[in-house]
Image 1: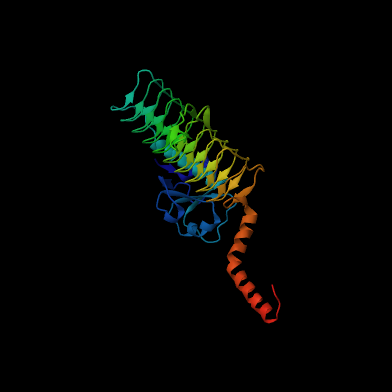
Image 2: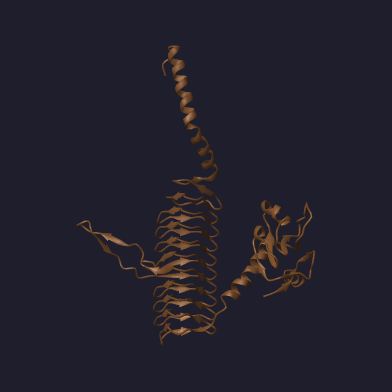
Length: 346
């Protein structure tokens, strides 16, 4: 697809500084620019690249003023990052524009498939399952009995949706993610063996949620594991049974949330965080990478770090002190020697 700088600026409500007739046909990082490519500059750290980029045009904020001569055309917009994100969404939509039922897929006669849906070869849709309008089902996806997938969803290769689970509208689930596998429930027996506790609940995923690759969201023992609207999970995130994650919370890779924990709205949880079960995390909580959360967080909009985690500012101060411990120990030993020479007992 080709578009002129002028037409693109109209689409984005922008202002052109340079050649409005230049042709754009692709996108590229500003440091890897090439002819007919559009790049963007939002972070000042990358400003040096705008003077050397090979891209035909660059999206910038309206407040940007160059400090050197430019060879590229500028499209000035209110928010360059948001505008570029919008354009990438259009490219992605074009790349995934598929419809129809491919041969080699299995679709139960007792299931329901919406209009303009796409079901790839080797996908399996079981009895009572429901697939919404414009939803894309890629190869080797499994949709279990009575599971429901909403409108405008994308389920990439190898996604598994177990029976009775519910996926809302506009959700994206990347390859290998499993939704509705059994929670980790085992009852210890007198002989020290473990007896499996049946997991009879389901998983409910609300609208506008995205899961990365190879995530695991366990079904509830009873009731539902609930992922609220707008939640974003990175690759390799584990959500245990009966967990509830509040709307628009984001969780980075390799984080694990144990059973029955309730995470609030608008939280940011970095990578490799461990959260114990049966606690509550307040709205707006920010948790640094590799932290361990072992008790309820009641105060909203606070940052935490460490294992066990505590206030982020205090954790930074403690880190500074910790690094100074060897020097402090050396100075203490020297002081003790001086005291001993003076006959002062510690």
